Image (cartoon, rainbow, N blue to C red; front, side, top):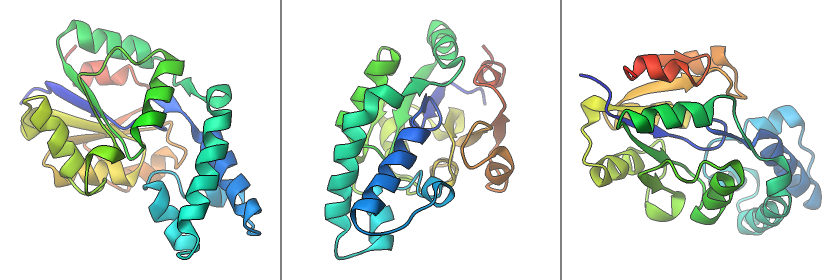
Length: 211
């Protein structure tokens, strides 16, 4: 069946927040007397923030989340940019009447900030954030919620992301999936999660979607 609905992860897929996230994790760890390398910081990218800090210090996870968010918000607009060809791809998908939405593990406020600073805030029919769900990716709940809001079928839906959580969530919801080669985790790592497609450039999506 043709792809009629495309759901995107946000960070690391549409917008480049990698440096911001790494710096925010390293800052937070330092504040709590812990060491964290850039390589290890990159491994935290993807899951909900609180889940990551619970692995580090269950007793202080909420404090660490607050420290992270304060640093992240303060430096947000300085670091965040859209990845190459994202706007052009979204424009083409919109012109061909493809339904496009976002499914992210970020909170609504920071999602809105990222979309505004990159100029991508006008393209999406549906945006599902961490605030909207009980169970975040890789649970299928946010994917299914987005599909329901867009009157979409799993058979004609594609989930695009840079992380295992995105690929697994798409599969768990019965949708097709696409990894992005510009993931900080690396193309080869993403291929081990067996996405349906791999995008070397965002423009590759147009051929897959029949645009």
